[in-house]
Amino acid sequence: MTKVAIIGSGPCGLSILRAFQQAEEKGHIIPEIVCYEKQKDWGGLWNYSWRTGSDQYGDPVPNSMYRYLWSNGPKECLEFADYSFDEHFNQPIPSFPPREVLYDYILGRAKKANIKKYIKFNTTVTQAKYNGSQFEISTLNKIDNTLNTNNFDYLVVASGHFSVPYIPEYDGMKSFPGRILHGHDFRDAEEFRNKDVVVLGSSYSAEDISLQCYKYGAKSVTIGYRNNPMGFKWPDGMKEVYYLDRLEGNKAIFKDGHEQNADAIILCSGYLHHFPYLEDTLKLKTGNRLYPPKLYKGVVWQDNHKMMYLGMQDQFHTFNMFDCQAWFARDVIMDKIKMPSDEEIEKNISKWVSEEEILEDPIQMIDFQTEYTKDLHASSDYPKINFELIREHFKNWEHHKEEDIMTYRNNSFSSPVTGTIAPIHHTPWAEAMDDSMDTFMKSK
Ligand SMILES: Cc1cc2nc3c(=O)[nH]c(=O)nc-3n(C[C@H](O)[C@H](O)[C@H](O)COP(=O)(O)OP(=O)(O)OC[C@H]3O[C@@H](n4cnc5c(N)ncnc54)[C@H](O)[C@@H]3O)c2cc1C
Ligand SMILES: NC(=O)c1ccc[n+]([C@@H]2O[C@H](COP(=O)([O-])OP(=O)(O)OC[C@H]3O[C@@H](n4cnc5c(N)ncnc54)[C@H](OP(=O)(O)O)[C@@H]3O)[C@@H](O)[C@H]2O)c1
Image 1 (cartoon, rainbow, N blue to C red):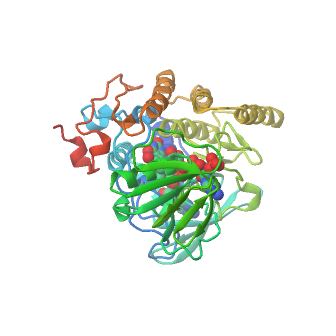
Image 2: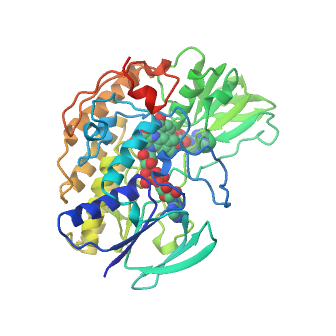
Image 3: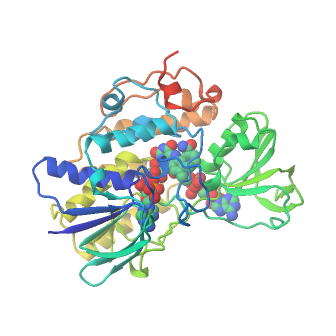
């Protein structure tokens, strides 16, 4: 029987496990599947950990989420087509839930599909090689320290790409008297109450970590962008300035001449696509972009069609895009989708990669990723979902952010699966200090 190895049980790993389980439910014979997960539980980044650095076994902690993290996009845009929010919660819920609520939703579908049985927890993939006909996957069981090697016909890499921080260095860091950390190690904004905080970066982590620090009482927040400012209307106490030049003592000196005393520097400088366990010929080498090269349909490794990557794109669309990728990968593995010729594959990849290169703004990027996801969706039996509505929601969401970065999370959207219109949350986001599921689910 065909054997498939999946690395990671975050949202992407769970998507492909669900895809196989759905095929089995429909009466198909599915391959033998093993999913390796280095943590003790499933859900990937959504499974919050207080830990930073390495875990009790010396393994790097992959988690990058922090306390008080709320969804930064409308939940309707990531809804599973086969498992609606209405089905999970039995009541309509607001559009921007905190992490714990989305975690519960992700696990709800996984539990219903009974897919935990495929996952080997506390098992790190340490090496993956292709021997010409099969993948040799070596693993370390972290509990009993045993090493194993098993052979598989297909390999699905779902190990995420927001776990290994990219950490630049600036002059003066060595002698800076305060704390320097990357967003990957940021856990609780309370730590920065009454502090002058400097945040470097201009993407989602910079935006949200700055807002968290402001919301939980930082004295000041100064954001240093490198290329383009985010340009939102920041509340008093927050500002955006051009590129850090150096630190002198506790003073941050920016290239536009701006100077700011700092108690802490938070590097929101992004993450590395880092696959230390993969041999070089199998390794995806890319920055965080909407169409990484060498992936047919954004999924199948161009140089070896028995290898798939899930979720390696920069992400507007998330869970339902991962599902479309997973359903596609499943059907390639089960031989329901035939791979075209090498020339066709090259042409297809080049088309998407070159189209991405000329995108100019977030609205064009939303269109690009929506088209990509729709294209994938058309090739499998992933259930119906209204991607045109999702496209429109993403564009409205961008406008809401431009109108007011402090209130965009108070808006309501409609479901692309059930049509349900989300209720307005009982507490505006800027005043909602408690992010627990209990408090979120209560109506006032
Ligand atoms: C701070 C932050 C906030 C975010 N907020 C949102 C949000 O609000 N909304 C949204 O839609 N998306 C958000 N995202 C995007 C996020 O990337 C996706 O939602 C999702 O978690 C990606 O799923 P994944 O399965 O690809 O990766 P991950 O969630 O990273 O899961 C990968 C899994 O692989 C395991 N693994 C890694 N290496 C190995 C190995 N060698 N052996 C075995 N197992 C391994 C890890 O332990 C992990 O469980 C956020 C990302 C970050 C960093
Ligand atoms: N739910 C939430 O609220 C939430 C919160 C945080 C993150 N997230 C998610 O997490 C994911 C990762 O986002 P991210 O912002 O961490 O990574 P990212 O989107 O890849 O952005 C990386 C940022 O680092 C900057 N950068 C790189 N090198 C730098 C340097 N030397 N100095 C200064 N800046 C530098 C880049 O600037 P340039 O543009 O100039 O290159 C860019 O702004 C996204 O999917 C996001 O949605 C969600």
